[in-house]
Length: 355
Image 1 (tube, one colour):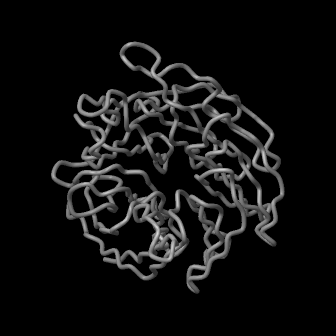
Image 2 (cartoon, rainbow, N blue to C red; image 1 turned 90 degrees about the vertical axis):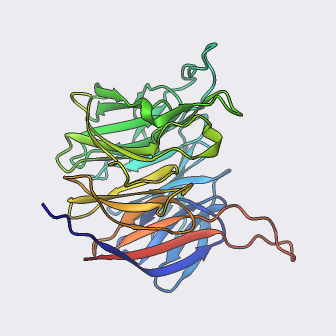
Image 3 (cartoon, helix red, strand yellow; image 1 turned 60 degrees about the vertical axis):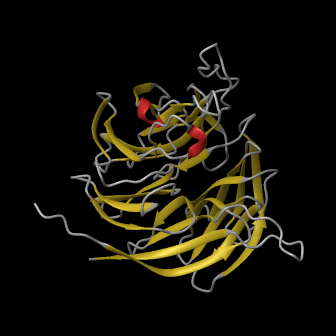
């Protein structure tokens, strides 16, 4: 079977004042909400215009769009979720959901639920295994009013969360490469698996665990979960682990596929998104060594179909209804210039995918 290669051609490229940690598209897809280090930005993609419409007390980590309510929800390192009007940008409500950071937030496809994950890694024994939770690491909320539906246990820190395409399941992945899956209706845990390939114990410079699962997607039939992060390292501070994704049957806790040999370089992968045609997916993140930091993979074979080298850290990727790939992130964290100002280091790019 011949796998057709794809081209990824950049069509838009512009900057925001600070790095973008998360993003969502609004209904007409010409506007993007960017969760940035210094606040929430509303971005006109084609016009390359932006305005800051809100802030958190610290970095803003995630953003989702509630089409039915014409509202935007953002999560931040202040542990809060905030609802903003998509009509006039006004603040509608806020909820203190976590005592620590919200690492990641997801919206169920039926738009009924939000899930947010938290947790601080603290050594729990002489082997530096994570200490137990100080609060439930996974919270499921009503999207409409922020009321708590489930508070679910995991092992901190929990860094990624995703709903299944039918909104029946919610899955969360942590620092130790463990994924737990719950039924949304009942809050009952229905599955789990652990891949130690995603976590590293430092024996050079640092003595702690680093890494984990940074992004996840359910397969189109919801039977599998694709996870991504970075392969094992002797020196976690170097960031030179393999660019790694794995596919797991979560009901049987069985790995069925992973990044193919000689198709990856080095670097932490932080973003994962399924193509609208549901025949491929894109993984992206930081580049430590190699020739790409985002790549398109065939869902059936795992073959790499095409790639890009953005020159910046990719933190999230989105597809619009045209099948164009929207890529966001940040290029370092520069110092002030001669005038005492920080140069713009947030990045937004859009790519057309062709044969």
